[in-house]
Image (cartoon, rainbow, N blue to C red; front, side, top):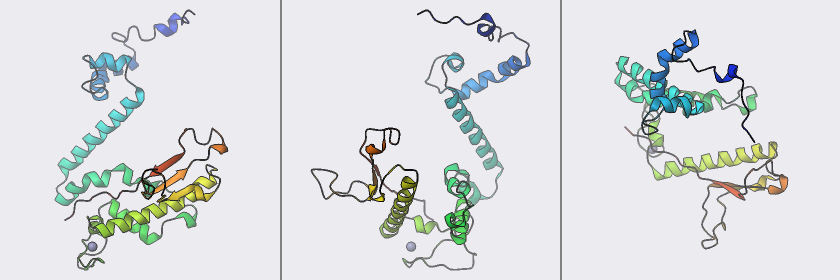
Length: 243
Ligand SMILES: [Zn+2]
């Protein structure tokens, strides 16, 4: 079949972009080379501009421009900051992923809210503010003195990390049980499993996942669009630089 021929009015839209005096093209020519430099990574092509014009994906470009803008703002703020502590923590304070749970969780239904004191601690931790006054000495359950920002709780201590990891695992477990049954992605809560044994034939005692979801394909193809029988999750508490 012959390709569809588009009318000249459409095909000629961009033909004179290099010389056109229309405001859109004037603006485009002014910034296009700089934008191409940001949007196309070094190894992509010998001619970044050609690549930008004909092969780049709008989503990738948007992400790269966003990252570039964020980096520039960060280095500008960083260069004007005089406080050493804030400078050191700036990256962490501005990290978007750690604001999500504070900003995006609906607080409309009081039952779904975090307790006020927990929210306050999480907010202060996000903004790297002291959790308690300077002159107050707080001792951790391990016997050591707690720093004002609570970072000590995230430092590497097998016991602390295991407890934390288990609490997070249990929280996600309860959450998935409620969530998946509500959106009808599972038919019984037993399909959300914790530390399940017997998944590996040769090592039946091994528990490869902290928690897992048994997918129910009887519910229909549109629910789980995957041939997998089970999804497994592992909870990891990451390291934090300690003082
Ligand atoms: Zn401790």
